Amino acid sequence: MKFILQNPDAVAENCARRGYEVDIEQIVSLDRERRETTGLLDETRHNITALGREWKNATDKDEHRRKANALKEDRSRLETQLEGIEEKLGHILERLPNMLDPRVPVGGEEKNEVVRVVGEPTTFDFAPRSHEELGRLTATIDIPRGVNVAGSRFYLLMNEAVQMRMALTDLFTKRAREQGFDLVSPPYLARRETLFASGYLPFQDKDNFTVNDSDLSLIGTSEQSLLGMHVGEMLTQLPLLYLGDSMCFRTEAGSYGRDTAGILRVHQFYKLEQLIYCHPSESEHYHQLCLENEEWLMRELGIPYQVVLTGSQDLGAPGRMKYDTEAWLPFQERYRETTSNTNMGDFQARRGRIRYKIDGEKGFPHTISATGFCDRLIIAIMENYQQEDGSIRVPKLLAPYLGTDLIPVRPVEQQRPMVR
Image (cartoon, rainbow, N blue to C red; front, top):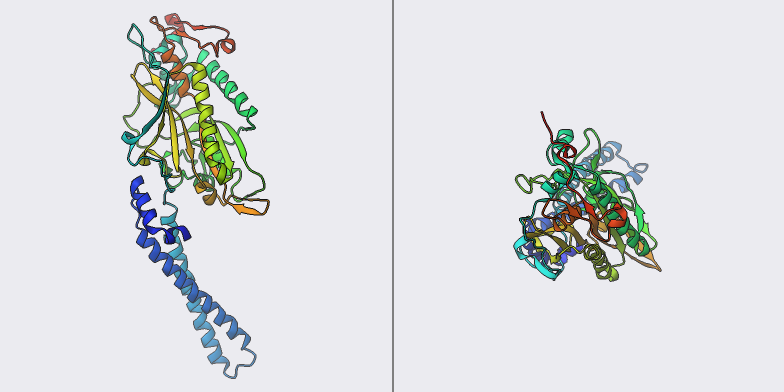
Protein backbone atom coordinates (compact mmCIF):
# COMPACT_ATOMS: atom_id res chain seq x y z
CA MET A 1 0.00 0.00 0.00
CA LYS A 2 2.85 2.35 0.84
CA PHE A 3 4.43 1.71 -2.56
CA ILE A 4 1.13 2.36 -4.37
CA LEU A 5 0.56 5.65 -2.54
CA GLN A 6 4.10 6.81 -3.32
CA ASN A 7 4.01 5.63 -6.97
CA PRO A 8 0.40 5.83 -8.20
CA ASP A 9 1.31 6.80 -11.77
CA ALA A 10 3.89 4.02 -12.10
CA VAL A 11 1.42 1.42 -10.78
CA ALA A 12 -1.30 2.64 -13.16
CA GLU A 13 1.09 2.51 -16.12
CA ASN A 14 2.26 -0.98 -15.12
CA CYS A 15 -1.34 -2.25 -15.03
CA ALA A 16 -2.03 -0.73 -18.44
CA ARG A 17 1.07 -2.37 -19.95
CA ARG A 18 -0.10 -5.72 -18.62
CA GLY A 19 -3.66 -5.28 -19.82
CA TYR A 20 -5.24 -4.97 -16.35
CA GLU A 21 -7.95 -2.41 -15.69
CA VAL A 22 -7.35 -1.05 -12.19
CA ASP A 23 -8.71 2.22 -10.74
CA ILE A 24 -5.72 3.56 -8.80
CA GLU A 25 -7.67 6.64 -7.66
CA GLN A 26 -10.23 4.34 -6.05
CA ILE A 27 -7.44 2.58 -4.15
CA VAL A 28 -6.07 5.90 -2.89
CA SER A 29 -9.58 7.05 -1.92
CA LEU A 30 -10.38 3.81 -0.10
CA ASP A 31 -7.08 3.92 1.78
CA ARG A 32 -7.80 7.49 2.89
CA GLU A 33 -11.28 6.43 4.02
CA ARG A 34 -9.78 3.44 5.84
CA ARG A 35 -7.30 5.59 7.74
CA GLU A 36 -9.97 8.16 8.66
CA THR A 37 -12.35 5.46 9.87
CA THR A 38 -9.56 3.76 11.82
CA GLY A 39 -8.79 7.08 13.51
CA LEU A 40 -12.44 7.57 14.50
CA LEU A 41 -12.65 4.01 15.74
CA ASP A 42 -9.50 4.36 17.85
CA GLU A 43 -10.86 7.59 19.33
CA THR A 44 -14.21 5.95 20.13
CA ARG A 45 -12.52 2.98 21.81
CA HIS A 46 -10.39 5.39 23.85
CA ASN A 47 -13.50 7.29 24.95
CA ILE A 48 -15.23 4.04 25.98
CA THR A 49 -12.22 3.08 28.09
CA ALA A 50 -12.02 6.54 29.67
CA LEU A 51 -15.76 6.50 30.45
CA GLY A 52 -15.38 3.11 32.07
CA ARG A 53 -12.77 4.51 34.46
CA GLU A 54 -15.19 7.28 35.48
CA TRP A 55 -18.06 4.90 36.35
CA LYS A 56 -17.33 4.74 40.09
CA ASN A 57 -17.30 8.52 40.47
CA ALA A 58 -20.23 9.25 38.17
CA THR A 59 -23.00 11.23 39.92
CA ASP A 60 -25.61 10.45 37.24
CA LYS A 61 -25.34 6.74 36.51
CA ASP A 62 -28.17 6.79 33.94
CA GLU A 63 -26.56 9.56 31.93
CA HIS A 64 -23.23 7.80 32.19
CA ARG A 65 -24.79 4.57 30.96
CA ARG A 66 -26.52 6.40 28.08
CA LYS A 67 -23.19 7.89 26.92
CA ALA A 68 -21.51 4.48 27.19
CA ASN A 69 -24.23 2.79 25.10
CA ALA A 70 -24.06 5.54 22.48
CA LEU A 71 -20.28 5.15 22.20
CA LYS A 72 -20.62 1.38 21.90
CA GLU A 73 -23.12 1.82 19.09
CA ASP A 74 -20.66 4.15 17.36
CA ARG A 75 -17.91 1.59 17.84
CA SER A 76 -20.03 -1.18 16.32
CA ARG A 77 -20.99 1.01 13.37
CA LEU A 78 -17.39 2.07 12.73
CA GLU A 79 -16.12 -1.52 13.03
CA THR A 80 -18.67 -2.65 10.42
CA GLN A 81 -17.80 0.31 8.22
CA LEU A 82 -14.07 -0.38 8.50
CA GLU A 83 -14.58 -4.07 7.75
CA GLY A 84 -16.46 -3.17 4.56
CA ILE A 85 -13.78 -0.70 3.44
CA GLU A 86 -10.95 -3.17 4.10
CA GLU A 87 -12.80 -5.95 2.28
CA LYS A 88 -13.36 -3.74 -0.75
CA LEU A 89 -9.78 -2.47 -0.71
CA GLY A 90 -8.39 -5.98 -0.24
CA HIS A 91 -10.46 -7.27 -3.16
CA ILE A 92 -8.82 -4.68 -5.44
CA LEU A 93 -5.30 -5.02 -4.05
CA GLU A 94 -5.18 -8.80 -4.38
CA ARG A 95 -5.89 -8.37 -8.10
CA LEU A 96 -2.99 -6.01 -8.73
CA PRO A 97 -0.33 -7.70 -10.92
CA ASN A 98 3.36 -7.61 -10.11
CA MET A 99 5.50 -4.69 -11.28
CA LEU A 100 7.28 -5.49 -14.55
CA ASP A 101 11.01 -5.64 -15.01
CA PRO A 102 12.00 -2.69 -17.28
CA ARG A 103 13.43 -5.16 -19.82
CA VAL A 104 10.04 -6.75 -20.54
CA PRO A 105 8.70 -5.80 -24.00
CA VAL A 106 5.26 -4.20 -23.93
CA GLY A 107 2.49 -6.14 -25.67
CA GLY A 108 1.16 -9.64 -26.18
CA GLU A 109 2.68 -12.78 -27.66
CA GLU A 110 3.46 -10.91 -30.88
CA LYS A 111 5.94 -8.76 -28.90
CA ASN A 112 7.92 -11.70 -27.50
CA GLU A 113 11.62 -11.11 -28.21
CA VAL A 114 13.85 -13.94 -29.41
CA VAL A 115 16.91 -13.93 -27.15
CA ARG A 116 18.78 -16.69 -29.01
CA VAL A 117 18.24 -19.57 -31.40
CA VAL A 118 20.17 -22.81 -30.85
CA GLY A 119 20.46 -25.38 -33.64
CA GLU A 120 18.90 -25.43 -37.09
CA PRO A 121 15.25 -26.46 -37.50
CA THR A 122 15.08 -30.18 -38.31
CA THR A 123 14.12 -30.94 -41.89
CA PHE A 124 13.35 -34.23 -43.63
CA ASP A 125 13.19 -35.47 -47.22
CA PHE A 126 9.72 -36.82 -46.41
CA ALA A 127 6.54 -35.32 -44.98
CA PRO A 128 6.98 -35.41 -41.16
CA ARG A 129 4.31 -36.98 -39.00
CA SER A 130 2.74 -35.46 -35.90
CA HIS A 131 3.64 -36.80 -32.47
CA GLU A 132 0.06 -38.05 -32.25
CA GLU A 133 0.48 -40.27 -35.31
CA LEU A 134 3.98 -41.33 -34.27
CA GLY A 135 2.65 -42.29 -30.85
CA ARG A 136 -0.06 -44.44 -32.42
CA LEU A 137 2.33 -46.18 -34.83
CA THR A 138 4.89 -46.97 -32.11
CA ALA A 139 2.29 -47.68 -29.38
CA THR A 140 3.79 -45.00 -27.11
CA ILE A 141 0.81 -42.61 -26.91
CA ASP A 142 -2.81 -43.76 -26.78
CA ILE A 143 -5.21 -40.83 -26.87
CA PRO A 144 -8.51 -42.65 -27.59
CA ARG A 145 -8.18 -44.85 -24.52
CA GLY A 146 -7.10 -41.91 -22.38
CA VAL A 147 -10.33 -40.24 -23.43
CA ASN A 148 -12.14 -43.49 -22.68
CA VAL A 149 -10.79 -43.34 -19.12
CA ALA A 150 -11.24 -39.66 -18.24
CA GLY A 151 -12.61 -37.67 -21.17
CA SER A 152 -11.13 -35.19 -23.62
CA ARG A 153 -7.56 -33.89 -23.18
CA PHE A 154 -6.42 -37.03 -21.35
CA TYR A 155 -4.09 -39.68 -22.77
CA LEU A 156 -2.05 -42.76 -21.95
CA LEU A 157 1.73 -42.54 -22.13
CA MET A 158 3.06 -46.02 -22.89
CA ASN A 159 6.14 -48.17 -23.30
CA GLU A 160 9.28 -46.26 -24.42
CA ALA A 161 7.56 -42.90 -23.87
CA VAL A 162 7.19 -43.75 -20.19
CA GLN A 163 10.83 -44.82 -20.11
CA MET A 164 11.78 -41.49 -21.70
CA ARG A 165 9.94 -39.63 -18.98
CA MET A 166 11.79 -41.62 -16.31
CA ALA A 167 15.15 -41.13 -18.02
CA LEU A 168 14.72 -37.39 -18.54
CA THR A 169 13.53 -36.99 -14.95
CA ASP A 170 16.59 -38.84 -13.69
CA LEU A 171 19.00 -36.83 -15.83
CA PHE A 172 17.61 -33.47 -14.78
CA THR A 173 17.32 -34.50 -11.13
CA LYS A 174 20.97 -35.56 -10.98
CA ARG A 175 22.09 -32.20 -12.36
CA ALA A 176 19.87 -30.27 -9.97
CA ARG A 177 20.98 -32.30 -6.94
CA GLU A 178 24.62 -31.54 -7.80
CA GLN A 179 23.71 -27.84 -7.68
CA GLY A 180 22.22 -28.15 -4.20
CA PHE A 181 18.51 -28.57 -5.01
CA ASP A 182 16.39 -30.50 -2.53
CA LEU A 183 14.12 -32.97 -4.33
CA VAL A 184 10.51 -32.71 -3.12
CA SER A 185 7.51 -34.85 -3.97
CA PRO A 186 4.71 -32.63 -2.59
CA PRO A 187 0.97 -33.14 -2.08
CA TYR A 188 -1.04 -32.89 -5.27
CA LEU A 189 -3.69 -30.93 -3.38
CA ALA A 190 -3.29 -27.42 -1.98
CA ARG A 191 -5.36 -25.04 0.15
CA ARG A 192 -6.67 -21.77 -1.26
CA GLU A 193 -4.22 -19.85 0.94
CA THR A 194 -1.38 -21.65 -0.84
CA LEU A 195 -2.81 -20.90 -4.29
CA PHE A 196 -3.29 -17.26 -3.26
CA ALA A 197 0.33 -16.99 -2.10
CA SER A 198 1.57 -18.37 -5.41
CA GLY A 199 -0.52 -15.81 -7.30
CA TYR A 200 -2.66 -18.39 -9.11
CA LEU A 201 -5.63 -17.10 -7.14
CA PRO A 202 -7.52 -15.04 -8.02
CA PHE A 203 -5.88 -14.55 -11.42
CA GLN A 204 -6.23 -18.13 -12.71
CA ASP A 205 -9.06 -19.41 -10.56
CA LYS A 206 -10.80 -21.07 -13.51
CA ASP A 207 -7.71 -23.17 -14.26
CA ASN A 208 -8.01 -25.09 -10.99
CA PHE A 209 -9.74 -28.42 -10.48
CA THR A 210 -11.43 -27.87 -7.12
CA VAL A 211 -12.50 -30.56 -4.67
CA ASN A 212 -16.16 -30.29 -3.72
CA ASP A 213 -16.99 -29.31 -0.12
CA SER A 214 -13.37 -28.58 0.75
CA ASP A 215 -10.74 -25.85 0.72
CA LEU A 216 -8.58 -27.90 -1.65
CA SER A 217 -7.71 -27.84 -5.35
CA LEU A 218 -5.49 -30.07 -7.46
CA ILE A 219 -2.20 -28.30 -8.11
CA GLY A 220 -1.52 -26.87 -11.55
CA THR A 221 2.22 -27.01 -10.84
CA SER A 222 4.35 -28.08 -7.87
CA GLU A 223 5.40 -24.41 -7.64
CA GLN A 224 2.17 -23.94 -5.70
CA SER A 225 3.04 -26.66 -3.18
CA LEU A 226 6.62 -25.48 -2.80
CA LEU A 227 5.30 -21.98 -2.00
CA GLY A 228 2.86 -23.44 0.51
CA MET A 229 5.72 -25.10 2.40
CA HIS A 230 6.86 -21.76 3.83
CA VAL A 231 3.68 -19.66 4.04
CA GLY A 232 3.83 -17.52 7.19
CA GLU A 233 7.46 -18.46 7.95
CA MET A 234 10.52 -16.41 8.84
CA LEU A 235 13.39 -17.94 6.87
CA THR A 236 16.78 -18.01 8.56
CA GLN A 237 18.84 -19.07 5.56
CA LEU A 238 18.93 -18.32 1.84
CA PRO A 239 18.95 -19.51 -0.85
CA LEU A 240 16.53 -22.42 -0.64
CA LEU A 241 16.58 -24.51 -3.82
CA TYR A 242 13.75 -26.98 -4.45
CA LEU A 243 12.99 -29.34 -7.31
CA GLY A 244 9.33 -30.31 -7.23
CA ASP A 245 8.34 -33.69 -8.70
CA SER A 246 4.63 -33.99 -9.47
CA MET A 247 1.73 -34.53 -11.75
CA CYS A 248 0.00 -31.26 -12.67
CA PHE A 249 -3.69 -30.68 -13.32
CA ARG A 250 -5.28 -27.82 -15.27
CA THR A 251 -8.75 -27.24 -16.61
CA GLU A 252 -7.32 -25.27 -19.56
CA ALA A 253 -10.24 -22.88 -19.23
CA GLY A 254 -10.41 -20.50 -22.15
CA SER A 255 -8.34 -22.75 -24.44
CA TYR A 256 -11.31 -24.17 -26.34
CA GLY A 257 -10.28 -24.98 -29.88
CA ARG A 258 -6.54 -24.58 -29.18
CA ASP A 259 -4.16 -27.52 -29.66
CA THR A 260 -6.94 -30.09 -29.46
CA ALA A 261 -4.87 -32.61 -31.44
CA GLY A 262 -2.14 -34.57 -29.72
CA ILE A 263 -0.99 -34.03 -26.14
CA LEU A 264 0.37 -30.50 -26.28
CA ARG A 265 -2.44 -28.99 -24.19
CA VAL A 266 -3.97 -31.47 -21.75
CA HIS A 267 -5.58 -31.66 -18.32
CA GLN A 268 -2.87 -33.80 -16.67
CA PHE A 269 0.87 -33.89 -17.27
CA TYR A 270 4.11 -34.64 -15.46
CA LYS A 271 6.61 -31.93 -14.56
CA LEU A 272 9.76 -31.18 -12.62
CA GLU A 273 9.70 -27.61 -11.27
CA GLN A 274 12.63 -25.53 -10.04
CA LEU A 275 11.56 -23.20 -7.22
CA ILE A 276 14.16 -20.96 -5.58
CA TYR A 277 13.89 -18.59 -2.61
CA CYS A 278 16.80 -16.16 -2.69
CA HIS A 279 18.05 -12.82 -1.42
CA PRO A 280 16.87 -9.97 -3.70
CA SER A 281 20.49 -9.23 -4.65
CA GLU A 282 20.83 -12.77 -6.10
CA SER A 283 17.55 -12.77 -7.98
CA GLU A 284 19.04 -12.30 -11.46
CA HIS A 285 21.71 -14.94 -10.83
CA TYR A 286 19.22 -17.65 -9.96
CA HIS A 287 16.88 -16.66 -12.76
CA GLN A 288 19.73 -17.31 -15.20
CA LEU A 289 20.78 -20.52 -13.40
CA CYS A 290 17.32 -22.01 -13.93
CA LEU A 291 17.40 -21.00 -17.59
CA GLU A 292 20.82 -22.63 -18.03
CA ASN A 293 19.40 -25.87 -16.61
CA GLU A 294 16.47 -25.81 -19.03
CA GLU A 295 18.71 -25.18 -22.01
CA TRP A 296 21.20 -27.83 -20.88
CA LEU A 297 18.72 -30.64 -21.33
CA MET A 298 17.61 -29.36 -24.75
CA ARG A 299 21.21 -29.07 -25.95
CA GLU A 300 22.17 -32.51 -24.64
CA LEU A 301 19.25 -34.01 -26.55
CA GLY A 302 20.10 -32.13 -29.74
CA ILE A 303 16.67 -30.51 -29.97
CA PRO A 304 16.61 -27.25 -31.97
CA TYR A 305 15.13 -24.51 -29.79
CA GLN A 306 14.86 -20.81 -29.16
CA VAL A 307 14.68 -18.73 -25.99
CA VAL A 308 12.19 -15.86 -25.92
CA LEU A 309 11.62 -13.02 -23.49
CA THR A 310 7.83 -12.84 -23.15
CA GLY A 311 5.81 -9.66 -23.61
CA SER A 312 4.00 -7.89 -20.79
CA GLN A 313 0.58 -9.30 -21.69
CA ASP A 314 1.89 -12.84 -22.22
CA LEU A 315 3.27 -12.93 -18.68
CA GLY A 316 1.26 -14.24 -15.73
CA ALA A 317 0.25 -11.69 -13.08
CA PRO A 318 2.80 -12.90 -10.46
CA GLY A 319 5.78 -12.57 -12.80
CA ARG A 320 8.20 -9.66 -13.19
CA MET A 321 10.00 -11.23 -16.14
CA LYS A 322 9.74 -14.56 -17.96
CA TYR A 323 11.79 -16.57 -20.42
CA ASP A 324 10.29 -19.41 -22.46
CA THR A 325 12.31 -22.09 -24.20
CA GLU A 326 10.54 -23.29 -27.32
CA ALA A 327 11.37 -26.53 -29.11
CA TRP A 328 11.13 -26.90 -32.87
CA LEU A 329 8.25 -29.19 -33.91
CA PRO A 330 8.76 -30.31 -37.54
CA PHE A 331 5.14 -31.31 -38.14
CA GLN A 332 3.87 -27.87 -37.11
CA GLU A 333 6.91 -26.16 -38.65
CA ARG A 334 7.15 -23.82 -35.69
CA TYR A 335 8.67 -23.45 -32.23
CA ARG A 336 6.41 -24.38 -29.31
CA GLU A 337 6.87 -23.69 -25.60
CA THR A 338 8.58 -26.51 -23.73
CA THR A 339 9.61 -24.79 -20.49
CA SER A 340 9.04 -21.42 -18.85
CA ASN A 341 11.11 -19.56 -16.28
CA THR A 342 9.70 -16.67 -14.24
CA ASN A 343 11.29 -14.26 -11.78
CA MET A 344 8.52 -13.30 -9.32
CA GLY A 345 10.50 -10.75 -7.32
CA ASP A 346 8.98 -10.55 -3.81
CA PHE A 347 5.38 -10.76 -5.10
CA GLN A 348 4.74 -14.32 -3.85
CA ALA A 349 6.65 -13.83 -0.61
CA ARG A 350 4.52 -10.82 0.31
CA ARG A 351 1.27 -12.63 -0.50
CA GLY A 352 2.43 -15.64 1.52
CA ARG A 353 3.86 -13.59 4.43
CA ILE A 354 7.23 -15.25 3.86
CA ARG A 355 10.10 -13.20 5.25
CA TYR A 356 13.78 -13.71 5.97
CA LYS A 357 15.95 -12.60 8.88
CA ILE A 358 19.64 -13.23 8.36
CA ASP A 359 22.48 -11.51 10.24
CA GLY A 360 20.07 -8.86 11.48
CA GLU A 361 18.71 -8.09 8.00
CA LYS A 362 14.98 -8.53 7.41
CA GLY A 363 13.05 -8.59 4.16
CA PHE A 364 11.00 -10.53 1.66
CA PRO A 365 12.89 -13.12 -0.42
CA HIS A 366 12.56 -13.25 -4.18
CA THR A 367 11.22 -16.42 -5.77
CA ILE A 368 12.14 -17.98 -9.12
CA SER A 369 9.88 -20.61 -10.67
CA ALA A 370 11.07 -22.54 -13.73
CA THR A 371 10.18 -25.76 -15.49
CA GLY A 372 12.91 -28.36 -15.31
CA PHE A 373 11.27 -31.02 -17.45
CA CYS A 374 7.74 -31.65 -18.65
CA ASP A 375 6.10 -34.15 -20.99
CA ARG A 376 6.19 -31.68 -23.89
CA LEU A 377 9.88 -32.51 -24.30
CA ILE A 378 8.90 -36.07 -25.23
CA ILE A 379 6.80 -34.62 -28.06
CA ALA A 380 9.83 -32.70 -29.33
CA ILE A 381 12.02 -35.80 -29.22
CA MET A 382 9.49 -37.90 -31.13
CA GLU A 383 8.99 -35.35 -33.90
CA ASN A 384 12.66 -34.42 -34.33
CA TYR A 385 13.95 -38.01 -34.26
CA GLN A 386 11.28 -39.61 -36.46
CA GLN A 387 12.08 -41.66 -39.52
CA GLU A 388 10.17 -42.05 -42.77
CA ASP A 389 8.45 -45.30 -41.76
CA GLY A 390 7.20 -43.76 -38.47
CA SER A 391 9.85 -45.31 -36.23
CA ILE A 392 11.76 -43.02 -33.84
CA ARG A 393 15.49 -42.90 -33.25
CA VAL A 394 16.46 -42.67 -29.59
CA PRO A 395 18.84 -39.80 -28.71
CA LYS A 396 22.26 -41.07 -27.62
CA LEU A 397 21.69 -39.54 -24.19
CA LEU A 398 18.66 -41.75 -23.63
CA ALA A 399 19.70 -44.99 -25.37
CA PRO A 400 21.35 -46.49 -22.23
CA TYR A 401 18.14 -45.87 -20.27
CA LEU A 402 15.86 -47.41 -22.88
CA GLY A 403 18.23 -50.23 -23.83
CA THR A 404 17.75 -49.51 -27.52
CA ASP A 405 18.52 -46.85 -30.09
CA LEU A 406 15.24 -47.26 -31.98
CA ILE A 407 11.54 -47.24 -31.15
CA PRO A 408 10.05 -49.40 -33.91
CA VAL A 409 6.71 -49.21 -35.67
CA ARG A 410 4.57 -51.87 -34.00
CA PRO A 411 2.41 -54.33 -35.90
CA VAL A 412 -1.20 -53.23 -36.20
CA GLU A 413 -2.34 -55.66 -33.49
CA GLN A 414 0.14 -54.08 -31.05
CA GLN A 415 -1.10 -50.60 -31.92
CA ARG A 416 -4.41 -51.76 -30.46
CA PRO A 417 -6.87 -49.75 -32.58
CA MET A 418 -10.09 -49.08 -30.69
CA VAL A 419 -13.05 -51.00 -32.13
CA ARG A 420 -16.60 -50.58 -30.89
